Length: 325
Image (cartoon, rainbow, N blue to C red; front, top):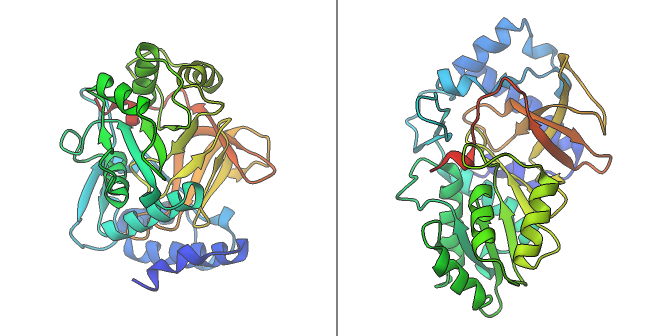
């Protein structure tokens, strides 16, 4: 465990690159699907010396293949959300402990110790969505909090309104994390001044309401909750790490996660800050699957290292946490 956890001590770009190149060669050797993909790209691992030279596996492979290293039985199988008849992505996770350590440390970097937080969720319960990586993360954060005021409220808006009106538990931050459409539904029915409160949205409308821009969402939720900013979480079934935004849709990654923006017209080339393109993700926590994922999301980097998510490629499936119900 100690050697696997070294990624959480990364302090520089150089360290990140060293870990990433080492993990690339390891996953090429242990992951049959990724090995075949790299060979098909005619890339010789020994000649890969930059992050930009690493082949990024299209995220669609998780719908058609078991993208996993070796033959270890999975401790969990997380599945993406989807409409009826849609092929869902599957992520075979052989080390749930690594997932827990990644999302706990990532959360701590932004919000501090989960023990000091009261968590309220507008998502399904773990019983309703046992294969959701998002719900699993929220449940385990609640366990660390141990606040008697924690709870899932997707089917109990009245109870959530009462809980918010009671204000936060003594010495605890109050965090409301939820599916975007569920937050909009609640805010429409039960607006109020709930400050101090941190609201974190986790996805789009995706089949439940008409899609709206992030600015439109912000202008709707902020006055409804009496807040200046709405926070966001950017994660997906195929990853073991998340990026977090504390407002204005600008996301920060933990030191063991990195975003690159690929040229939509030349997926083997990369763009600089302020240019729009496809989001590629390196997740060094994803050690027993594939750490190098080409998503179907569109985004852009900022000069300070933060990034924005602008939408999705038109041909991509409707998918994400908003389809959990």
